[in-house]
Image 1 (cartoon, rainbow over the protein chains, first blue to last red):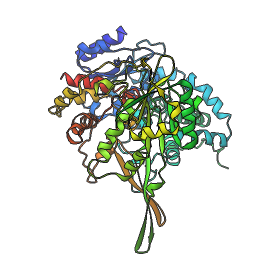
Image 2 (image 1 turned 60 degrees about the vertical axis):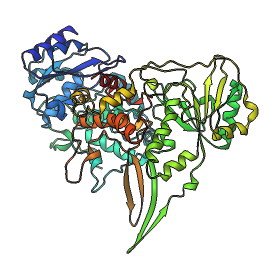
Image 3 (image 1 turned 180 degrees about the vertical axis):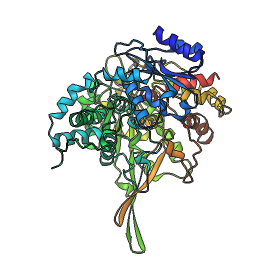
Length: 267
Length: 336
């Protein structure tokens, strides 16, 4: 993508940023994150349908931040992640340059966060089309069927925590599962412990998940754990008419009380 | 034991499988979804796959389960009673259909678990295991067994190794007494060997592991590690799908006055892995953890265990969500 390469080169040459986080093709043809610090190497940047990873996960990573000011190739989920990270005080808006990519793969001119906010607001923020069918099917199941489904799926979990590590919103330096005094969640990867882990993860992301699907994509054993958070995204929207990651001043919907909040769930 | 060579007809293979799976636990690969191949106990022969490149997880859990209870305890005032696990209850298992890389990994695991003190749990499970391996007639760009001293038809770790012929029959190499015992269950299924050639895939050698080991001796402070691990997100997927990764965590799980101690898989990729109680972490950034992973397999293990910590199955790379391709990195390390 020539316009992206030109822009990345320019940002590195005039030292606006010290690193451009984008995608490159690995030796097997898989697209993977690239951290370009040398303008001459900007040529290796790619953007096509293979580039699906949510790169925002690197914005809070110490060794990446150490390089200096960052520019990031940002599709809609990445932009929404950035908004969430700013709103949760994990990122300074002034510290990054956003190389926005439109839904049809064109480089956007995102001059500042106001422009980015405008772009996000006029985009479709509901769950991605490819998962909607599955979510609808899933909602037709009875609670017992749902339980059995997840019991079966989550019994496969090996607790590698790829779902957590791939998620830009899971930035805690010490996750609840790593606390052992008291130990909230069993360490072992049996069905019971796995269910506790995934339910906890989903609940921590309710109202914060920006529906990128990265957790499910990262899972090496193919558990569709993104359906849990995406389902909660639908629930939060139904109750509060809010989607996560739309502005840098957004307060977390489930930890904020508004007098006009629906309370229909209270029996 | 001297290797004997036999022929198993296509129909006889099914008979052998059915005899085994009706009399003992047989752990065999099945296609679980379009991207996942899982091992299951005693699946129907028609469900067993013979055309997979690699299962999603390795088969190490037959000797090193992801969770293993070590003992139970009860506390009564000042007295504690410990109940050991009865290792004699561990059942015989026939591992069916695993590839040479996975089977070679049992030797690697033995070099860790039986290094100084024999790990009774591991040793018992290995003793009870019979491996009927299958040579590879398929491979992909992630395979690199030939770079770590193995081949798609290495016999290491197998009790019987089967290699498919063009007509669908199999050559069987009977390699151990355990293999012989399988043959003696139904000797009529094993016929005289023919001259037909087995279909063996070819796997390109990507690096020379001895040169890599030599390079690593002076590469500890090399900027290579930071530059090549920025994209690593620090999950444990590589370690958990790996057939030779053997690190585990030990935990107590108590309920009132009773409890048990168990061990479960752990990974050096996690930040918590080396975190000290003081708060100090000797590997406090991901590049140090990635270095540890490669150093352990290609430098420390050759030095201390006299075995390479990698069998070239490629799972860590194909299963990595951010394409940390180990063969690519080792090739680059060889040339730094």
